[in-house]
Image 1 (cartoon, rainbow, N blue to C red):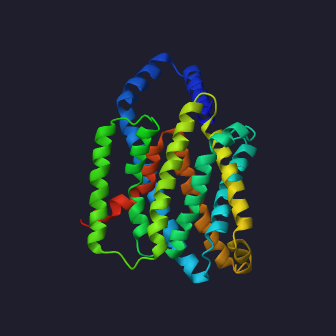
Image 2: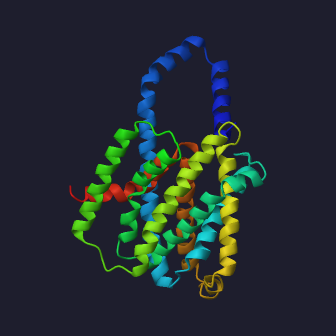
Image 3: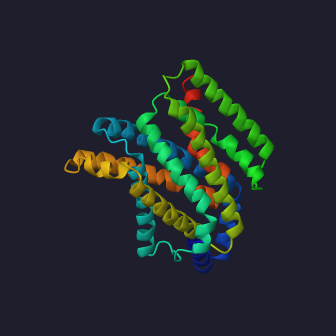
Length: 308
């Protein structure tokens, strides 16, 4: 059983044991109509918190990478994923979540999203360092639409898919049109390759995660799946750091005696790790489309707000 479901079941059992039946019935009658509203408010709060974290992450990255001339995407992506692994192990150590040992069977099933997610993580940091035209975030706004298409391909359940597809299509093209009317800066040739590649890899990773979670539901908890995914990504990015020429350069060119350098780096990596955790856990617990919407909401909505 998922640890959070276990906690909820314990709270429910305590509530039933320590409260009168009449009071429970009254509370249930009052709260039942409010459940959809509360779920909607919780989803809205999650989206707002993620958008604020995304905005702060972009702000810190735009300061840290140019000021300290530290555009080493592969080592930074490795540290970002490794921080998530440390966080999971710490939560397991204090007993907040229970993690099973690394499963080779799950590792094989999650190998494709681990590879896709690792490369996409590197490309996202590369975009913060080297892509200044706005093409990368512009292409990323198509993530929900591509996720809907892959959801049908992977036979994922998408409630109200026709209405959702129409709404996302209108919102995406409106946002892209507003941005294009304002114009883009000069583009580098690599942006034409890396921007659509990142979109495809990210959407494929989310859809594959949702599919694996759907088939493993009832047998493996969300945190066990994410732990296996994170271990696999850490190994892949660690191996890539060893092979990539940026690995030694990242150690040599880092201003490791400056607390300001370390603070900016830690802030950028922690915010990126939290975003990665939110999106992947959303894909595993719910589906690929909510994760894609969570990731792309800020980019989709901000251009439309600028019209007001």
